[in-house]
Amino acid sequence: MGKFIEDFKAFALKGNVVDMAIGVIIGGAFGKIVTSLVNDIIMPLVSVITGGDGYKNLKWVITQGKEATETTAAVEEVAVNYGLFIQNIVDFFIIALCIFIALRYTMKFMKKEAKEEAAAPAEPSPEVKLLTEIRDELKKK
Image 1 (cartoon, rainbow, N blue to C red):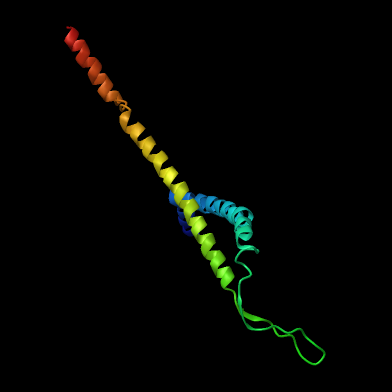
Image 2 (spheres, one colour; image 1 turned 135 degrees about the vertical axis):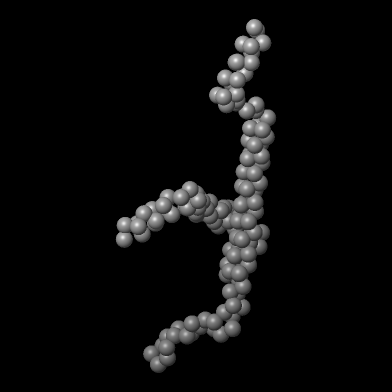
């Protein structure tokens, strides 16, 4: 049992697993931001343009619902909710666009840092410094 715990601890504390966990947490928070953007900002504007409350209530009713009476049970409405499908497609494209923009700027930032690191002269190792000092002293003599 001790070996199992050690192996699990080594697995769980690997850098990749921790990085993935951080990514999932940040992704969840980012998802909430994008969902709020869609529901609270974009869809109200779409509602104004379409003259309704967006796409959510668009549906094709196959069978009308009926309320319960003393002699019959209630019958639920059977409908194809294509408005929700359209809403999910719009949400997907907005989320994909937001992720694309975030990744694009992240990649630009990372490329800029890589160029700056490549342009900066590398610090010589202690051995190289020592050999350089010895060479300079020998030149003086």
